[in-house]
Amino acid sequence: MLNDEELEKYRKVGKLLAEVREQVRPLVKVGTKLVEIAETTEDLIRQKGVEPAFPCNVSVNEIAAHYSPPATDDAVIKEGDVVKVDMGAHLDGYIADTAFTVAIGEKEDLVRTVEQALEAAINVVKPGIDVGEIGKAVEGVAKAAGLKPIRNLTGHSLARWDLHAGLTIPNVDERTGQKLKVGDVIALEPFVTDGAGYVEDQKRAYIFRYLREVPTRLRMSRELLRDIRRRYDGLPFAERWLAKRMSKLRLELTLRELSGIGALWPYYVLAERAGGKVAQAEHTMIVTEQGCEVTTR
Ligand code: MN
Ligand code: MN
Image 1 (cartoon, rainbow, N blue to C red):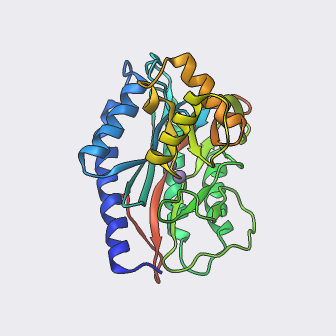
Image 2: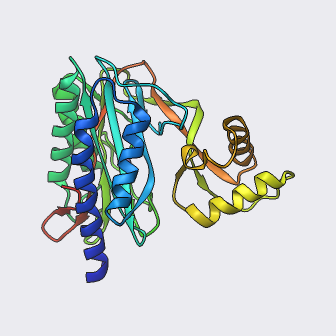
């Protein structure tokens, strides 16, 4: 259960993040650089007096998630793109997580469907349900539109300083044995696609999380790891946030080395298996006696 102070923090950070989301939405148009969307989002979060809980993800078309553009990415939004913007903020470790999709051109049905799927999912949330009921609602809406939910991407519970706090909430109909209870804080994030309905890891990562101290040979690596621990302990960070510290090549090599020895967790870019376009919508909510209170409306 949450006490009043915790509730207030979840509500406040959720409301501020919803404001950021609506300020960023009009930027998602032809010609805007992806990195500008990410940096504007993170700047607006800080201007509101809270902190990014993870790097802003700007994932385009068949890239479903985990793409946070590096500082050197000069890609811009093009006609026909399906652009997902996923953002998080925290206030003293209490997190809000929300996402939206803009389709430039014909793929508006993907966006409409994923938004309907999220609303259907929110409507089934109440204490005592198996979280598989949420997946059933998402899958039903996706299939009715002739689309597929992505099976291996899920929603999750949240806790203080913890983005994935234990509950895994499917986007397909399956019994999990995991039940919701009053005071659970959860993020529901359906993904729908016109592709195969699965994502696969790519080899590249631009988002990482500190895992543990591991001895390294190079002093530069040791110092970077120590700094990462001090600044981002437990929460994900972007390669871009470290871009001023060393050359791009050196930074990439160091992050790869630290991931390889188990000091960092790399979040590999996730791409739709069949190359289908992917849309996502996400809200954070608190489970109440009657249902839930969405914090990111
Ligand atoms: Mn998210
Ligand atoms: Mn999430």
